[in-house]
Length: 125
Image (cartoon, rainbow, N blue to C red; front, side):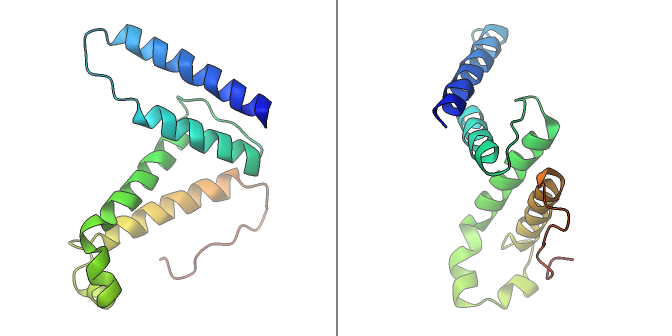
């Protein structure tokens, strides 16, 4: 595990240095790098594979995760109190965005999982 963390930190620093050199004088947002490193470290521990920071699959996974988490900010309290509202106002309460993100995350898990018959949530159409 310590070796994986060390390798991930090295890749993180190299990627950040390259991007900062490319974008001199501009504002630099680093949160996606840390999210990527954490996800990559977790994935390499659980699934056994690491991804390149430029891998489109991992970028989509990070975007889907971000969309899922940020979509519930407005409607979470309402949906806890009145769960039927997700069917009446799915776009406004973020339900459609959450379901789209869950499908993307499941798609990544199916492709990346060593398990042949990967289980999925049956309620998602």
